[in-house]
Image (cartoon, rainbow, N blue to C red; front, side, top):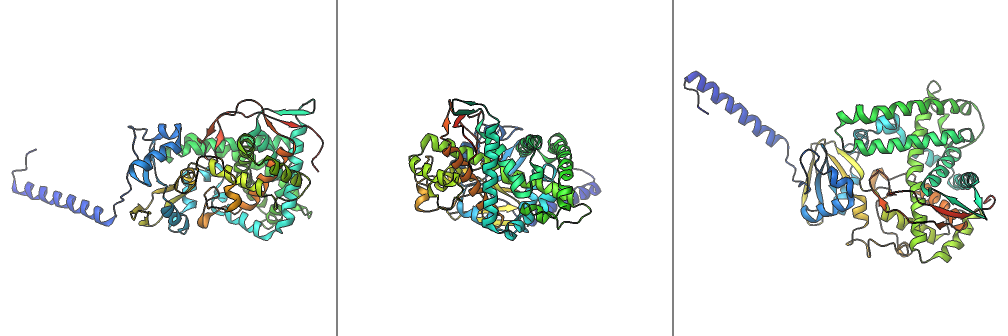
Length: 471
């Protein structure tokens, strides 16, 4: 390229070059550089999307071994920083909302469309308020009674054969039991409808599918292609729920603790807001716990060496005792959750100009404003340096101590419903064991593709003793 010959043109050229260089210098010095390395094995356009979908946890472990415990991934255009360092994780999860925002992060993956903006901005605070205001022991008794009722209701729909009944899909059965129990125990009996339960489950599956797709698409594509259709379905479902809630809100009858708090919402739009909160509540309260209950049963039947202790504890729960004296049920559920914890969790968006976090080896990682930061829960929960015999099912480790792990998240955004969720999972596991559950046929492998605790790659068939109500 030739330079201008005219002196005026040359001056203009030099001025333009000076401005360009000054601009580049300003940008370079005004915004700090991030030293987070890229994960290996990216391909053009798709980045890491294909290898991530094949097995996210193996991919994260490979990246960790090659470039270190903090790295960038590119999922077909959506870029995120993954954390596998406990020290960095602790700082990320402890950062206040104004520094690392959970709300902004979940909006970016579409929860404002799929679950509703009020759920994203106010839902967790509302649910935490309900949990704090309710008498805990009485509420747990109500939950336990309703979960037993839901279990028996679902079981009554199956056909017994010589005293045994076969369930074609353990996960569907578990989910239906949880949805029914959450609707009635948390809110009220007017929501106990087979049709409503089925439609809620269909919608929740769409939310799960949309979340998985939105996580690997740029937001400008995810909104029209994935999120708005789910939003339209949610609004229709909310109208149905609001119509069912209207007479309940006007009534003075004391039912579930959420219904009691719904009555304090502004009357003008109270039913509509309450209906949106019901959507978020059922999604949070049923999805992961119901999967955890099904997975716990599978692990117990395949690997547990404490079946006698578990059977004794299961009978206590089936007779109506809350699982506060059932250490083996607790340990088996905890160990199941460790092995099946989410691939990606604790997602945050950086709200400040820069955020620094130091790993165990002294490396300071810099995250920049607007970047998404996530924690690789399962990789950390199965890290051989933190857990002995890390990939094996060893529930007795939770009889001796309770090591910290991530399935309910950590820090300021830790799940407020952990105790209730753990109680419900143990109750349902106990009901299965009390009916002498058996696996029927092969068990498909774990599937970490969805944004939940691990599911299975196909249906799991079981059989149970068929008898009358558990209570």
